[in-house]
Image 1: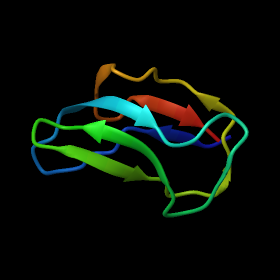
Image 2: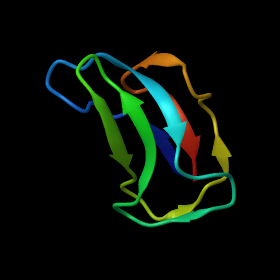
Image 3: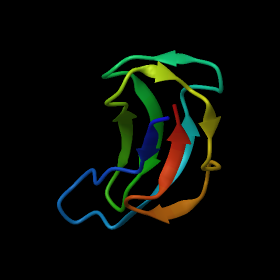
Image 4: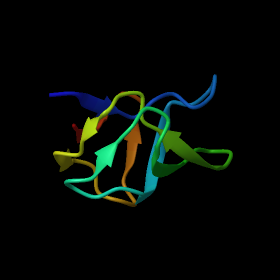
Length: 75
């Protein structure tokens, strides 16, 4: 099982807010696919996945602010 965690999307990013998922449980994803939109202190950013697989579980609920490294989903 692959754990997908909130990446640092900038040099000064310590936390982010998940605005929306672009995938749902059961979707097949490929490296480079945009899977979520995260709000940083500066802007909303598309987040790409780095692995291939099937979305097993979306752990993080939208509108939650969490620190970098927080588990977001499992593939």
